[in-house]
Image 1 (cartoon, helix red, strand yellow):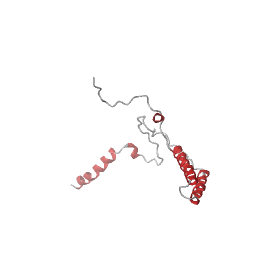
Image 2 (cartoon, one colour):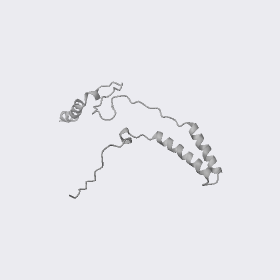
Image 3 (cartoon, one colour):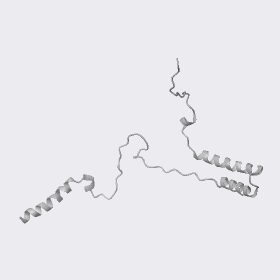
Image 4 (cartoon, helix red, strand yellow):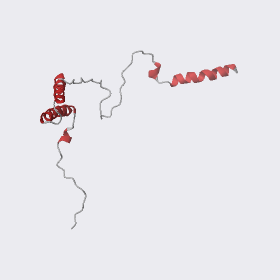
Length: 123
């Protein structure tokens, strides 16, 4: 009776260890690179990731705008000189934004297709 109970306790433990995957049974401390199935779209997960360097904003651009902003505060608001400096500051902001903005090549050139509204002409 006691032997049957001991067997019932140890039998599931023995069967669970047999059902474990083979890679989990090895005690190799060195991690192995895994290979993932890749469908071809997007980045290949099997290739190492490459870190790109971020471009830093040049100090000259910021210092030029700071000087303009200081000059802007010293002028009378909405005068001709004020608007000239304000337009220069906004142009510099637009240039910086255009450098950061990425638009795909197909979006830049309009297609030659004519938009069809779907209206029917009366005959």
